[in-house]
Image (cartoon, rainbow, N blue to C red; front, side, top):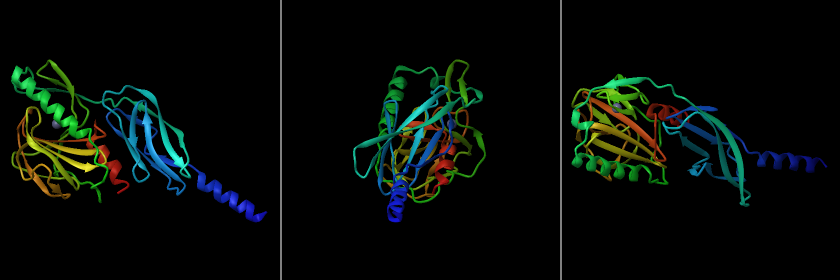
Length: 277
Ligand SMILES: [Zn+2]
């Protein structure tokens, strides 16, 4: 009898499904991290929200929330297998809330707001190329230690600020701006592979680094590159010098990040990841 009770307790504790969510509410443009309790009988597969799937790696998953999402309750469906049996489901609830971002009014070069036919075509092509990169997932992770900042400097504009360019064009700030006079060395914030190092219409001199598992960081408005496409980089390695290229009001570094193709607050993402690295 005692043996039976002990076995029962053991089986019950083995079959428990446990998780820890970084927060029960998340602002638009930010990321949620769900960590699942290690359990040898469970294989966590992915989390599904509406039609989008987010793969669970090493018992954790990152869920990026687009800036354009409105306030709502979200049902995240966790798909897992126990004892290699058929797929099971578990629902985790969280709520998207308004980030209440500030408004910024900017004045930039006229030809970066009212585009010529040639520039329109160029910008569209570059956007498509970038999205192809961001939407592809390298299953391996290059990350072995905590993220660092691309440079030590003052933040001049935060992620998410609503922006009005030259009084007409509306957009939002998709990254974090750091004060950087032209020629300031910029470093990779973690290990990865350079997937783009080229000059682009809006972003100017751009470097994009793949950190694996759908995580990318980008460094814009640079004046020169020290790295090439397909090159492996180490955390802290100089990737180039900051500049004033692309659609800018002055010299600075624009630093941004994407998870599973979605642009998110890079500093909040780093904070989240660094807690478990
Ligand atoms: Zn910026």
